[in-house]
Image (cartoon, rainbow, N blue to C red; front, side, top):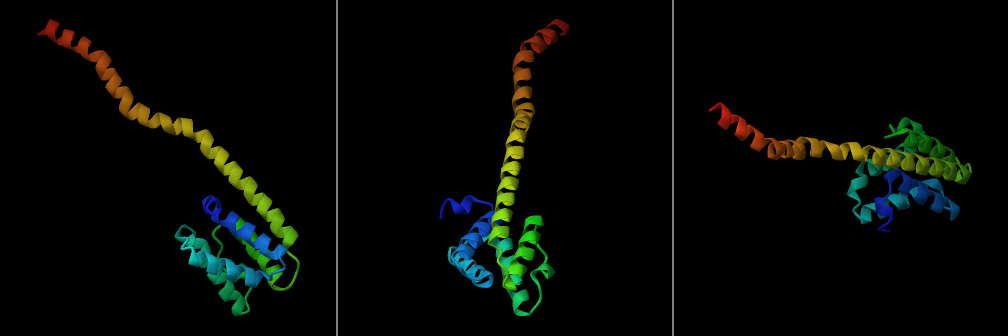
Length: 151
């Protein structure tokens, strides 16, 4: 479970949902179980997703589709549409698997973009702090000589 806590919250939810649907659980039951398990583990870093699950379940209890609930991202919006189909009794395992694969690709792409930007980000402290001090160390003797010669 420690490894799961480092995943993207939506990817973790998709994996949990896919596993639950593979076991034959209904979408609503699986969401309730996932929500209660996350509450028991005090996973506060996923608070937005937990609130979204609560709103989704409340929407279903009121007879409204999950699409009516505002989703915190494009993957969540697609997931809401899939969950609506599952709530109506349709088989959604293949769609959940496809969406999980898409979410994994997105996560890998985001990570790759972040890693590509790291060298440029690491230059900022170098330019702001180390370069001026290096210039001062190199130019100080020249400045002292210049002041002595002029004075």
